[in-house]
Image: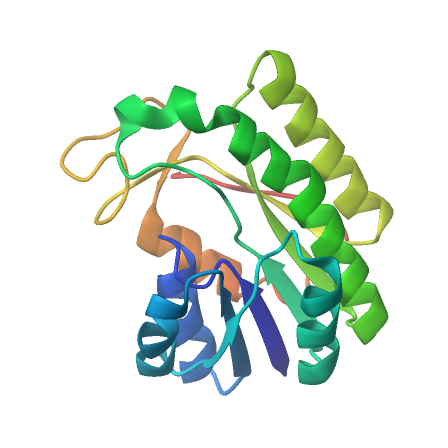
Length: 193
């Protein structure tokens, strides 16, 4: 299967890509940072440098790869938890506009599957509205919403401690995501048992 992973260098993406490659999938890994091209090569993916807000180049990149499935692991989050509030609007925008653009690109490419990262806890205000809109768009397009618990483990906000539930180890989140490429449209909750 050919899989296009947007957000391939994020905390889940950098774990998901090698799992997909190891399973025999051809993977294109998208990042908005040219500095991460070598990382994508090391993970076994065909590097794609593109911004999810640049609709035409995004569509061209996805169509050129001709994927069977598109996986959206896109976020716009800071490196430090205490900076999260400053990034809320940016992350809301990526949920609304970025995922919408990626859905349109997947449609143009004729991709049969679409999976999108979401969250298993409730946000208030604009954040909650952005999550609901993104999930509705994905489900309306016949895709799969991946509701992750709060991620913990290496590279996450919670490297050395457990976050409040719902939660899931980042490696487990990637492993379970890799097995959902053929999932029926709907919402899948990915949390610790």
